[in-house]
Length: 144
Image 1 (cartoon, rainbow, N blue to C red):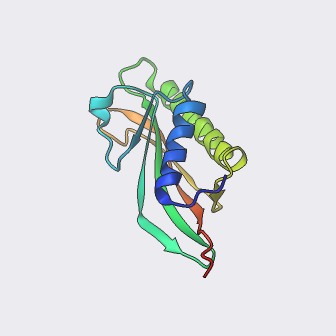
Image 2: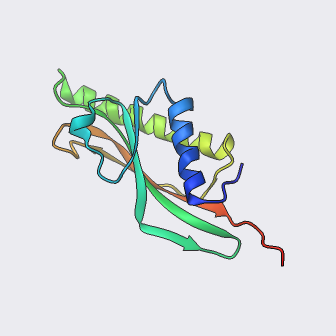
Image 3: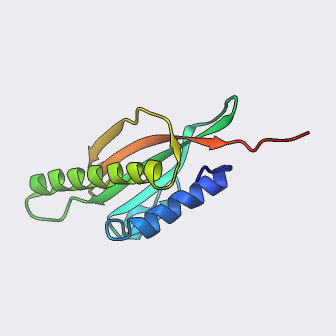
């Protein structure tokens, strides 16, 4: 199903994360600076409008959204092993999420998608992956 508005696209993404990935993601936030210390529910996904914004093209509009897939690293024994595990798990969930959007939801994504891994990005000891999705949004045809 091709989306026709930014709002519709965001709602579809929230629905996919909440319903299709509920066994892998505990919390979903649509905000640029998610309060990770207040949430305390992990693994989580935070996504928001990219600073690059959106583009108007011939037949589609492009909306750019930033994603962070996060889990707790600190406070557990064997931090190095946990770091590897968190980054590996979040990379796998992110990859599955992107594939689901493309194959099952019909979202038109721009490729390539570069994923950045991180650990201790926040002072509360979280790690995971981040990436930007450029989503093509169909423009409705206007008949005059």
